[in-house]
Image 1 (cartoon, rainbow, N blue to C red):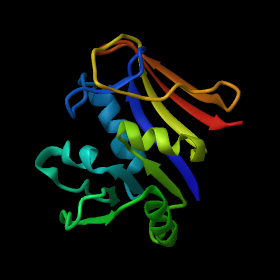
Image 2 (cartoon, rainbow, N blue to C red):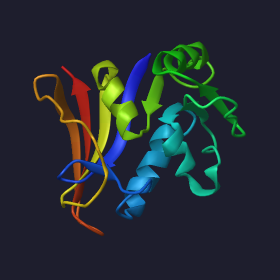
Image 3 (tube, one colour):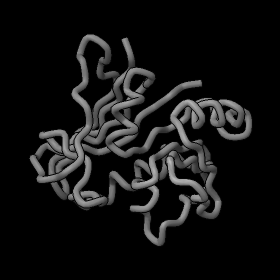
Image 4 (cartoon, rainbow, N blue to C red):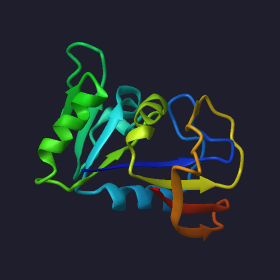
Length: 164
């Protein structure tokens, strides 16, 4: 199973503010949708609750990690640990794909960075204020294998990192 992080971050590593994204980059949302469609996505409860209407993302297996008892949103699988999420995901890779996406939030990224094989990072070339940050990447552990630069609505790059 390939474990991949997918996210957008600012130059100062911000990934969120008050449970939302501090930017609006339609091309990034399209990239996320196309990359994760028909895959398994794993997220924390707060990330799930940031979705419009708190509804599962369609055409994906949504796994939500929470310690809350009796938390059962529709069309999701709820687990209480990262290990539980990964075990469940592994049991479903034949139905979906061998690549499983971690989609946030900050604490889930922190706890799974050591497990990640790939990182799909939208690097926004601007600083933003925010309360959630992505961990610092160690250049000895990851290398950029693909890069596409864009200028609109703000300068940003799609970067693919792979574990060395």
